[in-house]
Image (cartoon, rainbow, N blue to C red):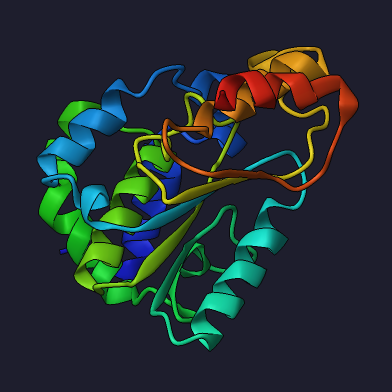
Length: 214
């Protein structure tokens, strides 16, 4: 079995990654993630999730919500990206990072199947987070999107509530050149019969969220 250092080298170097390859690493559909989740027996379906998208404020909103829920006694999973110092920071339960041993075991167990699926780095980490939160039996999981929303790998969940922070210009080559186009992509996390909170009113994109949620 690979060591933790070797496992990270595999994840970072052997798989497509947006930070390394840029737009070439972006997969504009959810086919791989759906295959991945089906292979793992859909751990995301056992989770009560809060889904968070937006241009700025996703990380701070995610961490504040996690702290509030944890202080109220809920066992809280938190999935964010990117990390600052170590990969384990991306996946936490009650503020404690995922154990390196869990990561190495997960990669060892599923590597051949996931290689056959040609998963991206982000698809790998999404599957890892879903499985870990299920195994940890969290009461609630806060899931932050990686890029956009509509076609983001996290957008296979059925959240109990969605949150969209402010909309600004980011990843325009992938999400669109106008605020309206970018907002439309972020609005993709809005689900039927699921409450949505828009944390910043912006007149130029408000109608998009209203129509999507209608």
